[in-house]
Length: 70
Image 1 (cartoon, rainbow, N blue to C red):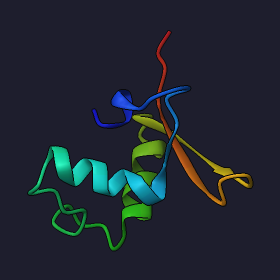
Image 2 (image 1 turned 30 degrees about the horizontal axis):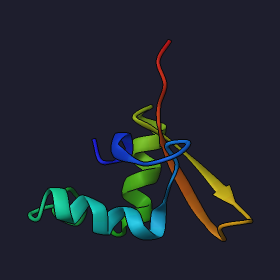
Image 3 (image 1 turned 120 degrees about the vertical axis):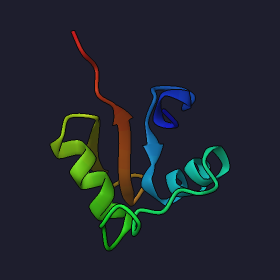
Image 4 (image 1 turned 90 degrees about the vertical axis):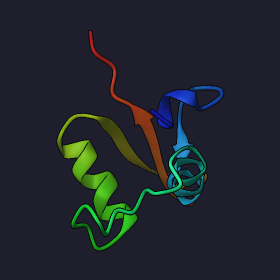
């Protein structure tokens, strides 16, 4: 998972995540999966428990982190 490859605390800014994902999977399109936007796709992933999504005022962006199991 691209989020798992993040540096530091594992948080990735949503604004750069799609670019990282497209580098890893050039054929990726959230629209092909039925989502209108990448944010909608990430919110669905958070609802499903795949990632955590939180707003960061410091980054002025959503931060995505891998869901920890445990």
